[in-house]
Image: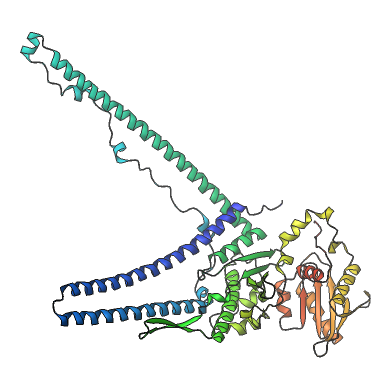
Length: 545
């Protein structure tokens, strides 16, 4: 039975819940800052008012001069306090930017699915008080107020007064009865409206509970869309400074349990260019001391590295279903190319790591740069200048949703499906690929290759050497045994590097094994990207079971 994808409704709920929580925290902090600013302003106004009162009460020239002196001192003090406030804001900003990674370490990033359910109760029925205290009028109580006819009035047949008062009493009763009926009808109408609203609320609660239950069930089964929705919630909830973009895309491979993240870094302008404010009493000016370029450069590099480690940490720590074994992170920044004036998105950091390796790191004690370097990350040497690095894998080439969309146009698409190639044809394709990339490739004979599909020679001096290549047209995840075999073959051949290319993906154990070894693993997405770079348009459509 085919699995049902997570609905757009529950995805919207997940995103909105995460953003609402983050926005509430931002609003709370903003309110505290505004309250503190108002308190300081009230103190200034109170001090100014006291000076004004004293000036009005001054009688001698000496008293007036003393007040002028106090007023001047008060003004200078207010300017000094203004500088202190500006410097305090600067310090707080730099502290926040310097503690991006530390901010998340004492928090549990796991999200309880129960938190997505509606916890509010529908309010009780509270109609206006005047509708609740109304009782039907008693006709006799109105008639009893009419004074009965006396003996003389009755004897003389003088019934006019009595009849008029009786008619007036009956009219009052009918008016009261009408008012009562109007209020009773209004009360019944309000009860009906309340009940309708309550039923709508209960249906929404029921729908929300059903959607959350479906999301939870899909997540427990490891359904790709549910895993991505949950991970998106985790990243949406992460609290950063207000001017950070917090924009990202996710792709997930269910087979290899790999989560690929494309994350937007903030620009270098998030760092204050002012290092300190000072009050120049002689000029009555608040002067700015500029922050050193080297300090800005170092802090920005620290920020992008901290965001990288923090994002991977949050994804893996929150992975309560143990669905993610590999995380690939590409961090980019939106910028304008000064040479062309066009919008660009240079990748500043790209890293792939396994869960076992990353969760064994004590992030509270590491040197962030050394830690990222040890994970084999590609880090821009000048992120402040937006100098790019080549991503470990291009996001659009691993997003399975992209491939699924292409499947709709199979009959109209002239690009070859790599899964339709024979093993020999696939080996030829891979050999041709590396040939087009500038290597001198030699295809080996399939019966005598000793575990080598192609041998390539990088003719560059110093950096070049012999490269052994294996090509596996697989539909299932490639395990670590194939990678071990490649490493053994590389050693036997005396090669300087080994490359394993597959149409599928790799498990976390494979990525663990190649760490610190001259081996490179190219999965299906990476293969499509490399082919595209040399002008070969292809696709990978796995055969149905």
